[in-house]
Amino acid sequence: MGPGRFGAADAEGLDSFAEKIVPHQVVTLVIANAATERTENGAVERRIDFSRERRMLCGACGHRWKVDLDWIDRWEQATEMCPGCGMTCEHEDSPRVTVDPDDPALDDDKVSRFSWYHTSTQPDWPTKDFDPAALLTAEARIAMGGDQRVAEWAAGQRAKALHVGTYEAAVHNMLRRIDDQAEHGAQFYLYRVHLKPSVVVREGWLVDPSNFVGDVVLGEVCPPGVDVARYLNYHEDPGGLSLALGRGAIAVVQQVAVPLTEAWDGGWVRDAVAALADIPDTVAPVTGGLSRFVRPSSPRAVLCRRLGAALAGRLPVNLQGQFASAAALAEREDPILWARRTSGLFELIDDPGRVLAALDEAQDRQVGGQVIPMP
Image (cartoon, rainbow, N blue to C red):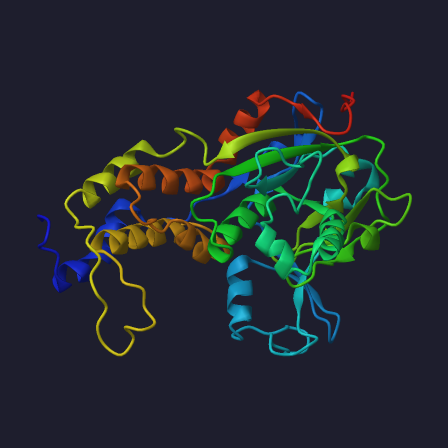
């Protein structure tokens, strides 16, 4: 197919073409023996399983049961109900994911021994001398009400808790940010976080304390004498435990830029690039009644979207939409770089062991003190 010869019939065939490049099998996303592995710092790596079953708790009748992610997806569409009382998701007290009572992070003594994870676009997270007002322009300061108001706002920003969670939650958070916060072209970093052995953990766990933009005031969840608070994460790795903490609770971090360089599937990249080679990248105007609401796309962008969606179809259902969005072709993005980036994102989920190996080779950066190796 040469440039300029892309027509309606070709568009109809793109889905089946994408399926040839990405077979329809769902990958098993588990590192089976990770629960007993330790890093050079002595921290314990827990089992990574994006597809694991979740625990549900009905707020109306108190029934507890296990479900898979497909069940949760159907429940969110009101096609499933509580087996105890028949309540669906539309009700205020409807069932929600809850903490697994067998989660090892419920053991206070183990919290500081585990590796925790975070993704960020900041290359030096957690920043030592964080100044949230540093990049504000003079016009922005005036619009905010002057220097006093800016100082108050900055103090509020510095009072926020940091967040760390499971590997699954960190990757999910990155996909959500690319999808929701227009950080499509940003470079992300994955951090492995080691806590100070002396941290004081708040008793029990909290229901996700984040406000509507995901912020938590540290002093509200970690009162004096407490360094770390566990909370049930509803949004990323739902049902998993994440931590709210201050910078002083962190001993050491290791970081890698993600997706990893040269961590893509070479066969998939070659097939995708070959498929895109003769597809025109000229944006076609949208016609009809929806033209005001639909952003014009080129045939190349359409095929990239369908190739990305086919890859997404191999992932757990709660990651599919955000992965497909993250895999969209950016404006003027080179097809080779797009294919490598998309495959690299997929490998973060499909092959976590490779990422952990890269972190093992990463240099320790001291944040608040040394990690004491455990026997």
